[in-house]
Length: 478
Image (cartoon, rainbow, N blue to C red; front, side, top):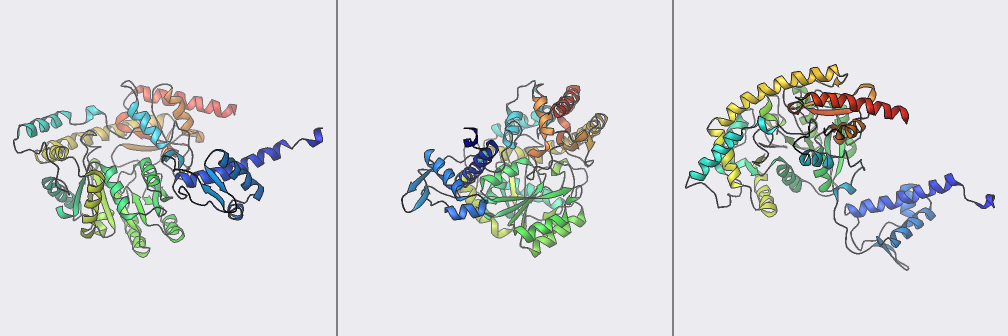
C-alpha cells in the first residue's frame, strides 16, 4: 500500500504550482487586465509563460471555475465570469503583512488613541501647529460679509491664493504665474489629477526606492507598472536611473527633491542636471512633490526651477506645515496642461474648498505663517539633533544627516527585521514605520523611518530597545 501513496514533496510542489497559476489569474482580474466576459489565456500560453505543465493549468482553471471566478464554455475555452470584484488595492503588488503595509501603517497612525506614540507617522504634533492662528483666520473670515462661505470656487481656485503661490514659487526659482497654478484639496489630490492626465493603465512609472509609501498605493490605483530606482544621499542612483529608462521606457518619474521622504536626503545640483538631461533624451515627464519645501532653511535645487516647468510638474500642499484639517494643495504646470487639469478637477471633485483656501491665504498675508515657520524650523532642528543622538546611542545607524525637516532614515543593528521590531512595538502602543513599507523592491527590511517631531518621549527609545531585543531573540529561535 505504501508504494501506491503519492510522494508528499511532489504533491506539495504540485499544489504550489496550481496556486501560482490561480494567483496570476486572480491578480489580472483584480487589476482589470481581464474584464468580465474576457477569454483567459490558453493552456499553451499559460504553460509557456509560467513554466508549468498543462495538467497544472487545467487543474488551476477547474478550481477557479468551482470558485465561480471562471466559466468554461465547451469548445471555446475559459472566460472570466460575472461582474468584476470590487477593486482592492491590497490585491495588487506584493502581499505584505497587514500590520506593516503602507495603508495599514496609515490606519495605525490615524486610528491610534490619544495615548499612543507615533514616531512612525508623517505629520507634526498638533501642539506644533498654529491652531490659534487658524482660529483667528476663521473668525475673521466669518465676520467678513464678502467672505466666500456658501459659493463654489472658480475652477482654478481662489485667485488671491494662486497669486501668493506664484510669488512664493518665484522666490525659489520656479516661474509659475497664477494662470499656471491650479488649487487642489491636498497634495495627494494634486498627484492623482496629474496621474489621471498623464497616465494610461499599463504605463510604467519610476519612483525612488525607498519613497513615500502612498506613492505606491496611488499608482497601483491607476493600474500602472511601478519600477523603483535606488536612492542615494544625493538623489537617485544615476546608473540605475538611466538603465531603467532604457529597459522600461517609463512615462513618468515621481520624486521629492528636498528633504526626501523617507530618507531626509536632498538632491545634489549635479544629479538634478543629469536627471533632467536623461529625461529629455528619453521623453520622461517628472512630478516633483515639494510638500516639505517650507521646512528648509537653505533652499535646495528644484527640478522645476532648472526645467522651467517644461517636463516637470510641481505639486505641494500646506497639510504638513499648517494643518492637516485645512486641506489645501496645488499644481504648477506648463500653460497648455492647465485647462485639461482643471477639467479633470471639475469632473472628479467639482472644485476645491473655497473656505480652506481663504484661511490659507489669510495666514500667508498676515504674517502668521511666516512667524510660525521661523519657530517651527528651530524646533525641528533641536528635535533632529536630539533624535539622532538618542538613536545613535541605541546602536541605530543614521543613513544620512538631513538638512532639516521631519525624517531620519536609520538602519537597525545586526540587520534586524524592522517589521518584526514594529510588531513588537505595537504591543506597547508605539507605532514605528518599517522600511519595506517605503520600498517597492522590499530591500529596506532593516530600516525604520523616524519622525523627529514625534520622538521627544523617553518611551519611544525604551520601546525601541525592547522591541529590538525581542526581535533578536525571535530570530535566534527561528
